[in-house]
Length: 129
Image (cartoon, rainbow, N blue to C red; front, side, top):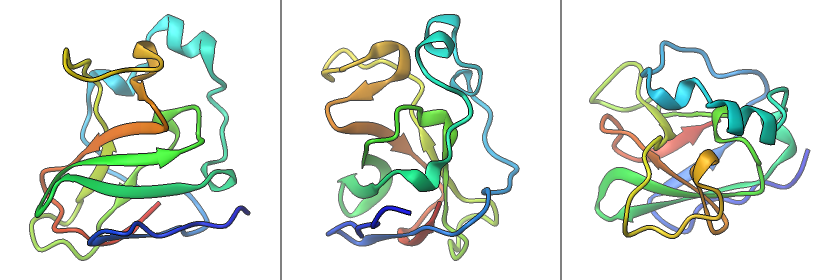
């Protein structure tokens, strides 16, 4: 397993072996379009990659930049198990294209160096892959 670095902000990252369990919010991004499915392998082990999480609108923990070398944003989620706002607080990829954001790959929603993730039910703290 590669070395995992914690974010320099209020959110820290700790990877746990095994898959994250749901339920997860459903979105259009949960069904990759045909172009995206051809582009990347769906059988990715998320523990083979590195992750750093940075809140985009501090002190609000709604949108995050996830710096990673993982080529598939659908292969991982982060869970905030200690959130007072929800028992199933999950940080997941934004499946929208914004006009004011530069993308490396719009089909995969990849921005330079990673992805934009969101959650409206986390307070930050310890985040688990």
